[in-house]
Image (tube, rainbow, N blue to C red; front, side, top):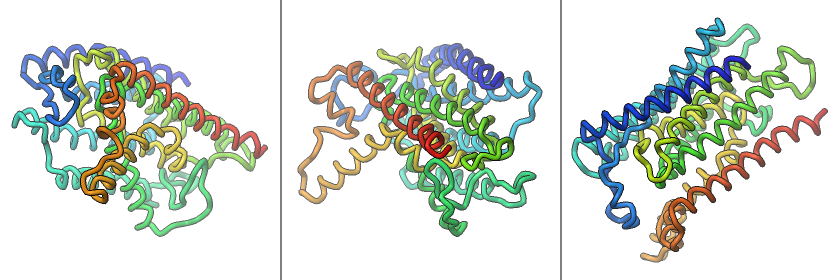
Length: 355
C-alpha cells in the first residue's frame, strides 16, 4: 500500500512539474499541434498548441514506479515490467507519429499501416513474454493466461496463437480507442485517470484475496496484482498532474504519444489482471467513442453519403449540436465515472455473492 501511495504521489508531482517544462521547451522548439481541417471550426484556434505531452505522462509513470520500488526496497515484478514495456513501447510509436506531424507540418504522421505494424510488434512481444512458460513464477503462473476472462478465468483454455491474436486485438483496439477520445481538452486525460484509479482498487482487492494467501474458493489466481496496482496508481497520478495543464483551455496536448500509451496500458492491465471483458465496462466511454466512428463510417458507405452523427467521434457530434467543449468533457467524465462505478460494483458483487 505504501508503494501505491508513494508511486502515485511521485508520478503526480513529476507530471505536474514536468509538463510545465515540456510546455516551455516544446513551444520554444515550435512543436505545435496541427488541426484537422474538417473538424469543428472552434478548434482552429488551437493550432500551434504544444503537443507530445504524453512524454511527461510516460516519464512520470516510470519515475514514480521505480522511486516507489527503491524506497520500499521491493524488487519490480515481472508483470509490472511487462506492463511498463507495453506502455513505453506504444508511446514510442505515438511519439514517431507526433514528430512526423510536427516535422512535416501536417495533420498526418505515420501512415496507418506503419502505425499498425508498430503497435502489432509491441503487442505480440508483450503477449509472447507474458505467456512464456519459462518465466512462470514458483506457483507456475504466467502474467497472462491462456483462458478468456471477465472477472476471473472462465476455464476455457485457448491455443496460444488465439490468445496472442486476442492480446493484439485488445492492445491495438484500446490504444486507438483512447486516441479517438483525445479530441477535446482534458477529455481522454480525465477519463483515463478514473479508469486507472479503478484498476488500483481491483489490484488491491486481488492482492488481499490472492490464492497464495487465502484458501477461499473465490480467490484470485493473478500474478503480482499489488504491483500492477502500483503501476496503475502511477499512471493515474501522472494523468492528474498532466490534466492541470491539459484542462480547458489546454496549454498542451498529449498527442498520440500519450493516447496510444494510455490505451495499451489499459489493455495490458486487463490482460494481466484477468479482467479482459470487465475493461469493456470500466472503459465504456472509449468503447462508445470507437463504436461511433465505426457506425459513422459503415453507415456512410452503405447509405452512399448519409451520416448518423453530425461528426465522429461522438464528442464532436455534441459540439456540432452547440454544446460547449467544457460541457461535453464534464458530462463525458460523469459517464466514465458511472462506467467505473458499475465495473467496480460488478467486480465486488461477484466476490460477495460467491462467499
